[in-house]
Length: 412
Image (cartoon, rainbow, N blue to C red):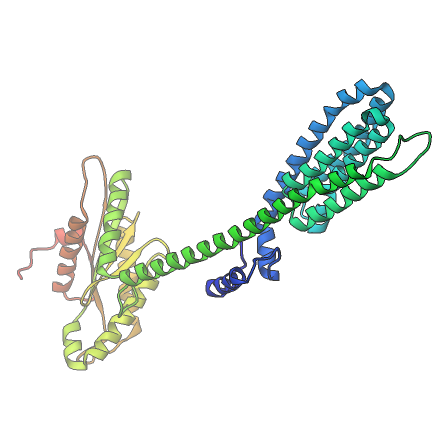
């Protein structure tokens, strides 16, 4: 994946690369590093698998070597098991390690070049009667490794060049008394030409893979932008513009979810309904600007006074606020309400008639059970009734639902 610098900058870089005339097989450094990080591990695993399958296929040739003669058979077995097999297993091991790309390229093609040399050597030792069979096997092997192995294109080019060099040298070299006659030049040219279409196909696939990577990164970055914008819009739609805390819409949704959880798992849930004392008089006498400032400050105190990451604070409407307190019994709810009340009073925001701003709060908490299920509306009604008693009992206090039940009825 691309390093995080900012999706717009990343998209610009990708789009410039895609728009270049004839997408090449190299990217700007940052894109190249991202491409290798995304494709490298899976590609190296695929190369390791190919090497093991290729070796297994070549071991079947031991049966053909046995038909030619014991000398060729034993030499083939010794070279494959003593050189090609260790090289293959070493390559598979190193391909799974974090090493420079050129090291992976060398270890990937080392067993293939060794196998090409082995087949050509056996072909020259087997005599003219069987050499054509080995020449064809070596040519097909070079074609297969070029076409099928998922190495980077430049690595394929270098590997093909080395394999063809070994092929050509061992085809034409003379060793009287050991080798048969040199391979006819037309057969050498055929084997070399046979590999070119495979290289052309690998080039096309490499370009397509890089283009697909860029298109995938483009789609990913654009999707991340869309999700980020949607998240931002959702948050804006859930926030109260003045106070910066959640709004009534979010509160209703959060309270509904919290009640569902409490009812489903027989857990406690608490509610605080909070009202700023004498707010209407403050707003009328000091002006809306002072009233807005008071709302902002009280909202921030509420946010700081509840349990971070657990409780939810929202503006209920006007000068009223609500706090949802999951897993809180009535004592916890009252204690948090008292902490809020004391903090607001200690802030000494000026109110009317020389007073400071205070709040009144109604607290309720209930534990769900098989015999008791409740709705969000009932919770709010219980807390609102307690708030009403707090206001009518002199303000600047927290009254719980239990306390409200013990108080005498107060006429409106």
